[in-house]
Length: 622
Ligand code: AMP
Image (cartoon, rainbow, N blue to C red; front, side, top):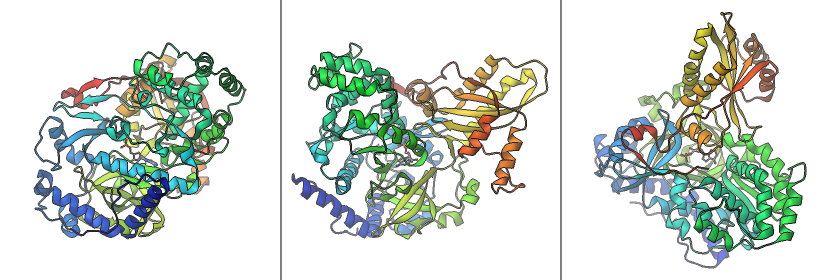
C-alpha cells in the first residue's frame, strides 16, 4: 500500500489558529497528491474487502490495483445491488458487500421503485463525516474572520427511523449523524457553538423542534453571526414558521414562560437555560415582525449575521430570490456537496456567487470515477431507465485527476462501506482545479424534472403518475392532448403544477371533483420522498392541475422553434423552467384544481415494510 505523506488529519491542538492551519494544510496535501491518495483509498477499500462475496462474485480475487478493478468490476446502479441490500436488511451478516459489519442503512432521497434507496454504512463512516465537517469552518474563516466570537443559528432536524427485518436501523444520514456521539458529544469548539441546544434538534416532534430552535435563536439574536440549514428549502420553511408564530415567540420572551405547546420535558429544560423574561427583546421582535414587508427580516432580527449558510446549488437555486429578499442580499454560502453514499466536496471559495459555486472533491472520502456525459445523448445514460453500460462506455470512465476542464461527468464512486463503481446519479462539470484535484459545478441530478425540497421526481415517474390520473377522464370521453409541469416555488411551501391540455370528445362537463381526484392520483403515484414531503414534513404544498386552452401546446412549440428548436426533433418538454414559457402557459390557463386531500404515506420504506421493515418511531417530520 502506498503511503502518502502528510495527508492525515489529527486535530489535537487546542489553539484555533493552529487547528485552522492544519486543516488548510490537509486540504493542500490531499489535493496536491490527489492521484496518490485516490490510489491509496482504492487499494485500502479493496484489500480490506478482498474476500467479500460481491468482489469474489465478479472475480476480483484480492486484486487491489486500479487496472484490474476497472477491468473486472461493472459500473452499477442501485438496482444491481438491491438483492444484496435486501439480504443484509433481512439479517444476513456474512460479508456480502463489506468486510466490516453494516451498522445501519442510510435512507437516501434518491428512490428506486418509488421507495428510498437503502445505503449501507459502517461505524467508521461517522468519523469520515466528522472529519469532512471539520474542514468547513477553517475554509470559511479565511473569508469571514471572527466567526469564533459568536454563534451559528442552524435549523437541524431528525426524521423518523425504521428497522429492517434483520434489526438494522434505516434512517437519513443527518439523523444518524445528529444522534451519534460525534455530534452530541462534540468537544467544545468555538465554531460549533450553536443557538440550538442538542435537545431541540433531537426532539422527534417536528413542531416542537422547529419552535424551540427559533425561540432559542431569537433569545440569542445579538450573538448570531451566521444562520443556516442544510438546504435552502429548509431555511425558508423556518422563516415561514416564524411568520406564522412570531407573536407566540414574543409572548414567551416577554414573560419568560414557554408556550405550553412545547411539552417535551428535555426541550423545556434546555430552553429554560436560555429563555429569560426580556420585554425589550420582545418589543424589538414585535416591531421587526409586524412591518408590512418581511424584506430583510433576517438582518432585522439577527443584525450581526454575516451570511446565510444553505445549499443553493442544483434544484435549490430556485430559492435564491426568496433568500435574497429575506436576507437583504447577504452572501448565500453553499459549503458542501454530500450524499448518503459518501460525503464528497467542499466549496473552497465560499463567498463566490451562487452561480459560480464549485466543490473540490476531497480525495480521502472515497474513490471517484467519472463517466463523460454527452447531454445531446442524454437518454442513453438515463439512470431512470437502469441500463448496464456497454464495455465501450465502461472504458470511458476517467479518474479524479484526469477529468477535463469544462467537460460534464456523471459521478461514480467506490466507498469504504461496500459500494463499488456505483453511479450516484449526479451530473457535475469541471470548473477548475485546486492543485491536482478538480473542482466541480453541480449541474443536476440526472433526469430529475421536479423538485421542491429533497424530493426528486423524474420524467418516468411523472409520466406514470399522469397516466394513472387520466383514467379519471375516461367516463367523460376526454383525453390528455399534452402536458408539462413546473415547480412553483412562489408559494410557501412550493408545489408541483401540471399544465394539461385536453381533447374533449364528450358533451358532459367534467366536474371539479374529477380533476381534484386526478391531482390526488398523481400524488399517490409519486415516490415516497414526495409523499413524505406532502404529508409529514409539509415541505411540499398540494399539487395543482391547470387546464390550458386548446392550442396552447402548439403555441409552446412555436415559441420553442422561435428560440431555435428544430421542428422535426421538437418534443413538448415535460417540465418548463424558462420564465417566458411559464408565463405563456399561465396566460392560457382556463381553470385550476388542487388536491383536497393528502396522499398516503407511511413512515419507513413501504416496500421494505411489506417484507417486515418496522417503524421504530414516527415523528411529524421536518
Ligand atoms: P441524499 O442521498 O438524500 O443525501 O441526497 C444526496 C443528493 O443531494 C446528491 O446526490 C445530490 O443530488 C444532492 N445534493 C447534495 N449536495 C448538494 C449540493 N451542494 N448541491 C446540489 N445538490 C446537492
